[in-house]
Length: 133
Image (cartoon, rainbow, N blue to C red; front, side, top):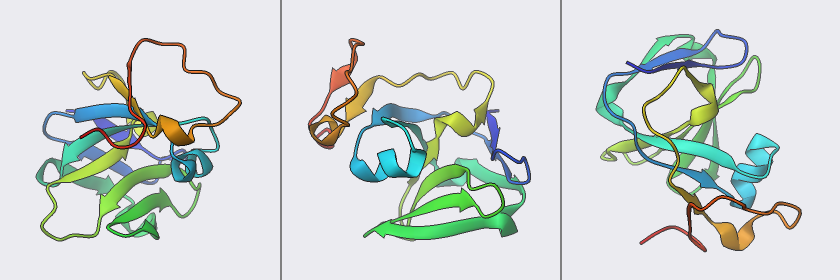
C-alpha cells in the first residue's frame, strides 16, 4: 500500500487502492503552489485514502471552485487537490509526497497551454492544451 507524508513528517497518509490518471500539471496555480515548472499528481479514490497521522495539521485553501488545496500547516508541503463536492469519487495526491515506488508513472502533461515560458517539455508523453476530454 502506498504511503506518503509532508516534508516534516507530521502528516502521513496511506492509499489502500490503485493510483490512477497520473500526470504533470502545468497550470499557473500548480506552478505557483509547487514553486516549479509543473506539479506531478495521481488520482486516488476517496474511499481508498486514509490519514494516518497529523490530519489536524492539514490546512485547506480554496484555490478554485470545486477544489481545496491541502497542505501541511507546519512545513507548507503541498499534499492534495481535494474535491469540495461530497459526492466526488477522486482526490488528487501530489506524487512528490509519496514514498517508494507508487506503481504508476505520469503518462501526460496537462494545461501545457499555460506552461512556463522558460520550460521545454522534452519527453514523449501526451500533451494536452487544457484538461483531456
